[in-house]
Amino acid sequence: MITIALSKGRIFEETLPLLAAAGITPNEDPESSRKLIIGTNRDDVRLIIVRASDVPTYVQYGAADLGVAGKDVLLEHGGAGLYQPLDLEIAKCRLMVAVQNGFDYEGAVKQGARLRVATKYTQCAREHFAAKGVHVDLIKLYGSMELAPLVGLADAIVDLVSTGGTLKANNLVAVEHIREISSRLVVNQAALKLKHDRIQPIIDTFTATVQARQ
Ligand code: PRT
Ligand code: MG
Image (cartoon, rainbow, N blue to C red):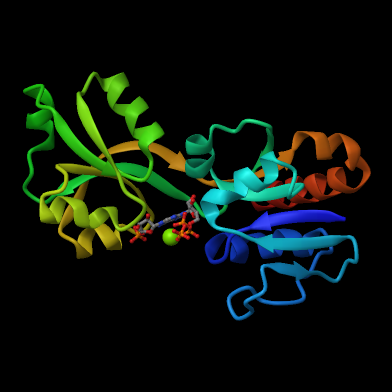
């Protein structure tokens, strides 16, 4: 059995065409089904539906052989035990620093002020501000980072931005680009060796499909 870990929403939707190219069709839609294990048209392939940030953990421990995870999630996880053979170029966005409209971020940085930064991405944020020599107090949040500057919890946030609509709706502006983010195929290193004959063709088909799109 080959087990593939995916999260609901954009990752599932954008992985579907890649699975289809590899001849894999889920038997159910995770958006409407409450099942966490979803069979496919192939007897030897199943999908498990987990939180986006839990995908690397399932693959690391071999509970899933393969998975799809955002680079943001992989950077926070650290990537131990994971082989990352392919950038799928899906679920693209940017990791950015944002502040409330009117907050003088550049000025605060120039003055050497200590900034309070709220984020789910504490590893990436720590590295980013350390490289810039900016002193920060990081405040770990699990979601809705956009709220933090509006209620005085933080001076700035580090969050993912795709359309920019969420920042705009909350009177925030992006002031710094940290990195581009897309989702990667992750593979359990031991499974790749033990189930090579079944996993490698999936990697190869995904690779060819992604390349054909460029
Ligand atoms: O939602 P949940 O808490 O379960 O987990 P999650 O947010 O990690 O999962 P999900 O499915 O929302 O995101 C999965 C992956 O998609 C992330 O790990 C990213 O790699 C990628 N991705 C791409 C995004 C976005 N675009 C994105 N826009 N993840 C989150 N967002 C959020 C962002 O955090 C912000 O709140 O959408 C909002 C901004 O969107 P715009 O379009 O208004 O700019
Ligand atoms: Mg989300």
